[in-house]
Amino acid sequence: MRNSRRAWDVLLAFLLAGMFLTPLLSWMLSAVGLVRTSMISAEGLRWFASNFPEAALDHWFTCIVSMLVALGAARGSGMLSDGMRHKGALAAALAVAMVSVSLGLMLALHPDSPLLSVTGRLRHGTFVHALPHFVSLSVLACALAYGLASRHVATYRSVVSLLAFGLARYARAILACFMLSFLCQCWKFIITGSVAY
Image (cartoon, rainbow, N blue to C red; front, side, top):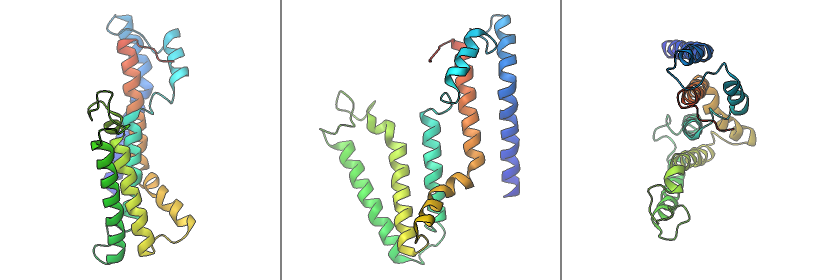
């Protein structure tokens, strides 16, 4: 556990250094003509002021956060650690999982589903785009059902704690994803010069 935290701390320090060095590197690379624009320019400063922190909150970052929240809820509810101790709670979680899978299959396979693409296929449709969030919500619902049935979750406060468990447990991973996502957006802007205000 301590080695894992140390590794995350090293990664966070590396990403933080990258965030501080990116403006200087972009300025140096643009001076010799290797990239389109610099973060230390009027255009770069406008992009930064208009896009921070929205640039980091892209689709994959929100997918990772929702998955970590769901994983934390599954761990916090006891669903992953209790084994077969609470068979009734396991049955409740399994019932919720079956309902989620059935709902997902209906949304994915029904020809009139509003989540299909314009051509009526899964590819490039809204369902595929939202699938990580759908899976996360399903796991979250299973964890909540398990926690309620096993009495690990009994009050409103314990429900809130369960939902926040993943954010607290995986805070370093979430921060690293945020920083990495923002660095990727910065370098995309530096290399391509594309502006999205």
